[in-house]
Length: 348
Image 1 (cartoon, rainbow, N blue to C red):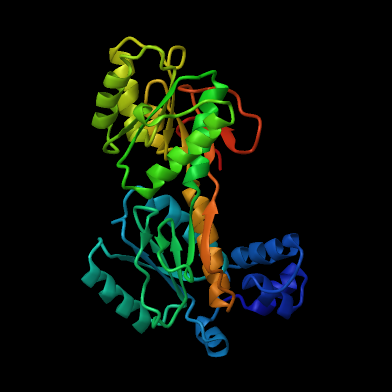
Image 2: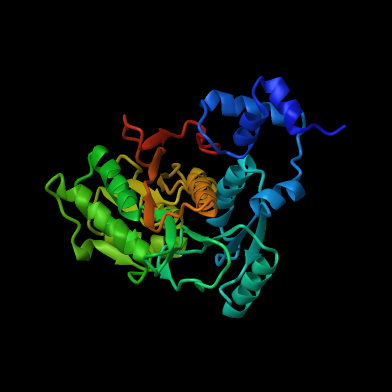
């Protein structure tokens, strides 16, 4: 016989009302009580009767996720955080890949409305503001990683300026004083924000990052390799902030070809913490982590609050952290970094 909410209440030693609140993330209770209820529900393999619940709450316990990234490498960690947060609410996730096609996107919005989803998360491949979705949609919308150009919409994204500050500060901790930056196109908002953060960190030490020490290009290994070969004719350079891990991998290859030691002669910090690529660089690449799993989890939790009638309009930014590896191993003593003792398995 299938377990009921009364069974959960009996085993957990709480009232039926408390068990219901614990399962649905409602009400005030001690964290250990809520966790005990959830643990008992898993042990009893509890399956809520969503048909009955929908009659009283009006919810379908389904959430849509519309990606414009084509399930690129930024989507999986964010998706993992979203799914884990929704699991607590026992909600299902419907995935839609718009592939940057306006017609396909409009089709999926119609499908999600017909399925009566409770809410929608929109994500993409860039943090640049995107056109808002129609106000006529019958469910709340939250933008994750990408942002909406409408300030009344809810958006949760990466604090790229903080990430640039972390990268430059790590190079300074390594003892670098002549730092250059190799990055992506200047038209990309994240590129400009990361430069602003790096300049802030350098200014705190009385140093500068002038325009002539910044190279713009593609986010590729080839671009990193070519830029490093040009910049390192100046042998006073002792630190390089790379705008992506792909650029960082190319820079590391160029330094090796020139006989320049990392980090003894030139230290490197990348961006994205694309773990497989960063760990395979020689030496392993220190990199800024955008915390996309956590961003996905927070986005889902925020959407659930919006579904309950408590939207959080405006743009909120999640701080980055630092994955410390051998290309810039200066010790860090605060909570903004973690030491990558096993570069293939980052700390949770």
